[in-house]
Image (spheres, rainbow, N blue to C red):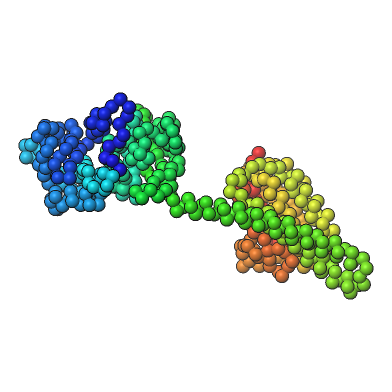
Length: 478
């Protein structure tokens, strides 16, 4: 990547380079491969007390010394590795004064990979140590360098880099879009545009995030999460922008793979449910025919076949509902009226199980709760669970509902064997059937999953004198 951005229309490359050098807010010099200074900004001249002509063509050792090594080794390291992290050094003035600074270098190369220049920036220090003031708080530069991703501080007007950590490409004076996209204008203008968070941050004063596709040195496509945030002055104006780039290529590929797998599973789920239900309906139909002509002993066998087929149909319905919940990543919780949903499921289960007694303890309150059309599955599964797990000749189910200022609570009590204390949590796990019943093992897991999605809770208590009470609490939404 070149060490200068493409100059805007109407300016020369030299004009553009001088403009960028002048914009750098700290002392800054450029050194050629022979070790001679080829460019300086006014701030370094002011800091060391030398004029520009004196510094141009001179060695970096004219103004800099490194207590823990030598300048030549530091420059060679920068040329070989592409960067030198913050290093304690002394900036020497024309009067012989030594000023403790932190020095950071970056290297640029031509298209053949040959060194073009090294770029050096200097930051004042109270001492030559790279970290910490007397209060043991890390300096701002140390904090920026600690960020484990490329990070830039940008000018709010033209997006030129004012500071960058060691992981970032480019150097002060470049524009962010020339460094990351090799463009001569912002990413959201001109042709082949890409989402740019910077203008939105300027306009709203709020941080934002977008995804960009960048290319590494080998031309490989890399997906980056671009985070941008504002820096304000004392009057609340956005004066600088902070931009960090997080490489999420592997995560993005994994998410794409997961979406494809989810779509494939949904297709398989639909096909299997359709075919299985069709076959089961055929079994049930023939079971009814056989029951009419079977003798009493055979009729018992037919009844077992029919019950098993009905439970298998129920399993396909529960599987469909589970798939709808687990595979829908864009669903949002809405608002539903509790009374018609609960009344409807009581009537439906009562009609399907005429051997059970289902009663309402009192009228269901007219209340709106958090939920969606899947809330009916919660009550249907709990009512069927109370019947299927019951060991009495006549399962007796009592339903009640109450409300307070924030929640609505539905209690479904039965006269069955109850739930042991050591199973009261486990019973909502996947595949838990309990009591050797004919249940599908998914119903209570679906109940807990849905209720949690709505921001509610479901628990099981002991009934008096026997049985269990399933308690569903849902947030009010009226």
